[in-house]
Image (cartoon, rainbow, N blue to C red; front, side, top):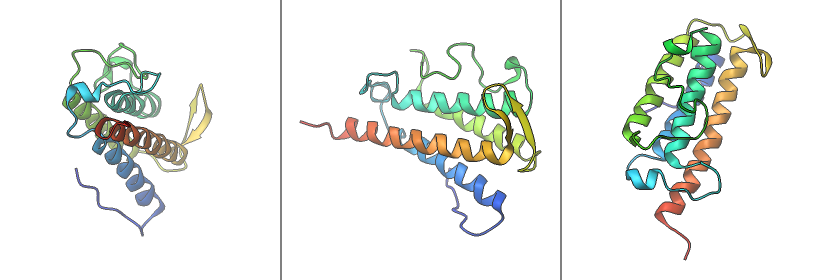
Length: 162
């Protein structure tokens, strides 16, 4: 997916475009990795290139499908009770499938977001009352942070220190 960078426009178009840029930046960090490299543990946590994508897909489902659209877990795109929102990836999950899961969840999020104004609010048990603007910016921040993590992991995979 190629993202057209929007630098001038409505607040909404700029915010949504920035979120899409960070979604794509996160995906680009894992493209071309082998299955083995996508699962390499280079830090003490469960953070791996593939787990960052899996976690991002869960964040899309949790925030947009569950909280904003009010969908039941069973109605969520790609939902599995298996470690929802964590960095755990099952052995049978392939990198291409996890990327596709994130892309599907992102597309569904875009559809859900289109039905709300930036100033619309929703009560969230963990955060309190949040606006659509806030969640779009929070997700942008989340995916930018994880793209940075993935960049570092990719560098370690491709150019390990001697």
